[in-house]
Amino acid sequence: MVKKKSSTPNRGFRVADQIQRDLTELIARELKDPRVGMVTIQSVEVTPDYAHAKVFFSLLKGDPAESTEGLNQAAGFLRAGLFKRLHIHTVPTLHFLFDQTTERAADMNALIAQAVASRSKNEEG
Image 1: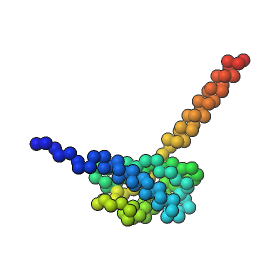
Image 2 (image 1 turned 90 degrees about the vertical axis):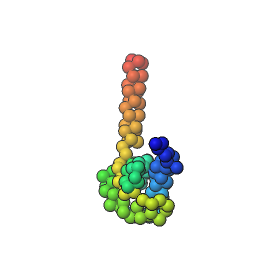
Image 3 (image 1 turned 30 degrees about the horizontal axis):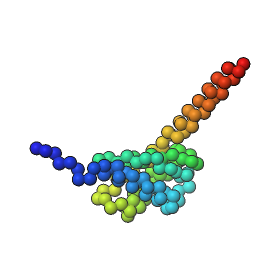
Image 4 (image 1 turned 60 degrees about the vertical axis):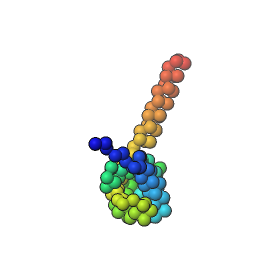
């Protein structure tokens, strides 16, 4: 028996992308929690059954732990906002996770700059 291919390939990626765009707008315009700093949604991973979505975010300003707590407490409110915008059968339960990639990259760049600076000093002397 030939397995029927999904009628819409990459649908999960498109749904995740739309969730990312809508959440960015909802958080900026409608979320009034003072614990949530200046949030940037980095990526969204949706389970194949659309039951859950991991939302990875970074911060321009604010405390990561407080922002994570505030976003996870507001997950129901944000999910309701998504439900009004998305035209899919199941709107996933949202799980917010702080993404440290940008912080690690900045730390690595600082270490590299430090190493280059100390190397050039050694070559001069």
